[in-house]
Image 1 (cartoon, helix red, strand yellow):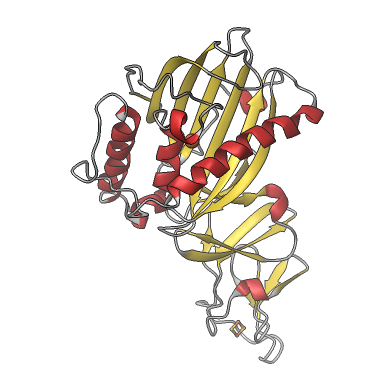
Image 2 (cartoon, protein in one colour):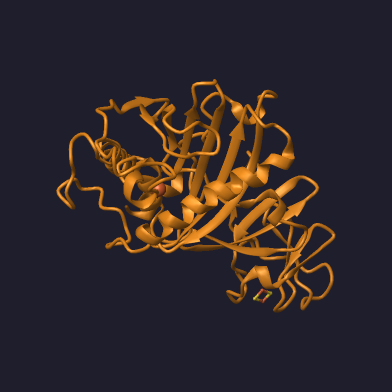
Length: 326
Ligand code: FES
Ligand SMILES: [Fe+2]
């Protein structure tokens, strides 16, 4: 997956809490960025001072203005250089003295950045669960994985590894066959569901048939909605951010319409954390790290790998579409 195609999509770089008043460096699609918070929200620039190429994240904020730590050039929140301390007061400032500024939006507890003209919206929750008062929705966990975002998301979509990687938790070796399921397109993403008995989740009884419904809502944003017979719904969701082609920052959300008290959060977080660590081991071992989007690479089984096949086609289409974008 070429990174250029992905510059037209929104990606999270951090949780809202991780960006404070002083500048901090983040990486997205191999670019170093500097982020800081003003009264008008989060600002994100390329982490580079036009004067001598020093990282602006080494500088500091003074009265809402980002000052480079090398010679003190100061940039306002639109990226315009407004002060060069080594010049006599009142001297004109070269019009080329600007920081490169990126669009940024804070939503669902995360700070989303697009490095190019955004071609899509910030991926919404499937049924607006984040803003639904019947749900408790939180940003739950964050991980750095040594893999591509595509590999991380495909793993999240894949059910046939449950009996092996998550035996006794999400699957059982007595029940390994994957039910046929139709992967369809929905709101520019992908959607499918299956029903399967689940061995030992905290929130279903052993042998309960659980409905697993998947919504891919952006290149690397995926929601899994799990419904148990009692009607309790739990969404485990992930926005994977391609920091480089082979490293990924993953942000997880949990939304649920049961056990709404915040004191129950830890139980859900512990449960998903155990699963994520099991996944990390296998996914970080995959070679190549970059997900192949040409279906002639690797081997695909029509039914068990239906989601992976559809996802690779989807990523290949994004790549193709990028050729027609500004
Ligand atoms: S490199 Fe930033 S002010 Fe000189
Ligand atoms: Fe898994």
